[in-house]
Length: 227
Image: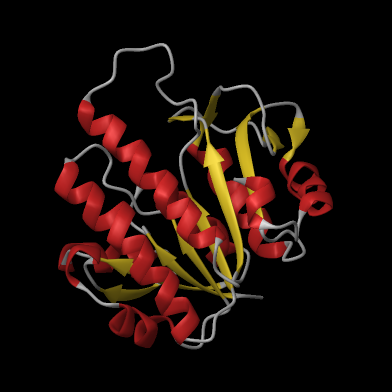
């Protein structure tokens, strides 16, 4: 079983992922910003770690995650504004990546954004900025020597997951339930041979375990070939 440090533990995907992981026997430490969130984490078997990505450092995060085997970054500003996007999706991702290196953790899973999100629609400057920051963070992580995986889900929906998805280096745009995103992250944690690959994700016809395992064939390629 893995020791997982979950950044974004109180978010939509994070809440589902933490329950899956603890139920499966993994040890999970979850970063939370508000004191009121700690009790819910404990109730799910998660060790709460107080911290704010908008006001932290790589060194503080490294101390918090030391001893873990894998870092999952599923935090996001969620359209809260440019400052929040820069602080969480931008600087926060950089702090977390550097913290993993300082803590001696090689495996890092990043939840990013599907490149075609919003294509053909009228989107706000805030959304355009969000997509730009997410791509910059992807490029930053892909340039590191970590055993990273960048997961780019399509539009997230709250309907129940089917347990069947489509994954690939480049696939048609679509939607995917948050529950299935959590299932894929769980699968990636349990299949460490999948690494150094950018995975696009939507709903599909393959069982999660099969879809995740198939990505091992593309793992280990140079970042330049995958961006």
